[in-house]
Image (cartoon, rainbow, N blue to C red; front, side, top):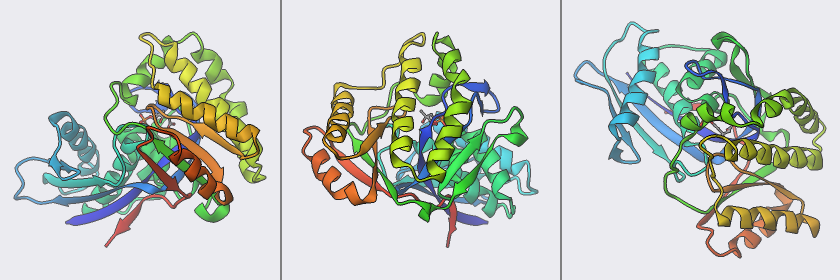
Length: 322
Ligand code: PMV
């Protein structure tokens, strides 16, 4: 009763910030993302009657009680679907810095859902896995399907899951993550989602979401990089305006974040077509076409204070490992 799974993180082009149903993690709006080839979590889960409690080892160390409790809660969902009620040993490893703007909870809960369900002997559809992953961490539902993904918001748990729009090899665009900080962020996304509604811009943002989703899907379909980039960049700024104007205000950007954003705009004005997007952290994701990766990487490496540059292609979703 042991299984191992690997799931990628994903970067949202159209983002999820604010919930329709807090408990069920149903988002206020649909979102669009792609999976990241070089930012993933590998998780093994073993259920055994000899265990006296659930244990969670994260990146080689015993996890904090609150983290273990969140994992346990998620395992309960799966145990409730199975005849096996044993405790589990969960070992999880990220190949990228956690809690710093790369969605570690997304890859984490997608990998956990797949590994745990498989070790319980459950054979679940992609839709079911996506719904379950969402209950662990919203954006984790987008790390289950392959390639370019849409998470349709829905109004009920059964209707709120992600599906693949296009496979990973549909379009060879890339996401270069400029890592500026490796530490944990102070206010995580779970808490942040609760604050969204306190921003005076929140309602306005939600009203415009359907149009954005439609336009982004059309840009993807036509492989219109300029349109996709413009929508992506404006969307990130829109989400951060809500964050910065909520009560209390959330500032995820640091001076380094802003410096990189400005550099991207500057490079673009000189002919290097690239666009930024930023999640709930200081790191900057830079979306580009694969032909520009080399040049962009050297430009980013020229900015003082960038700790790492991760180069991601679009990848498949969660998979079981032998
Ligand atoms: O799934 P959560 O609760 O970690 O929220 C994700 C929030 C953002 O990364 C900021 C946006 C997104 O859609 O990925």
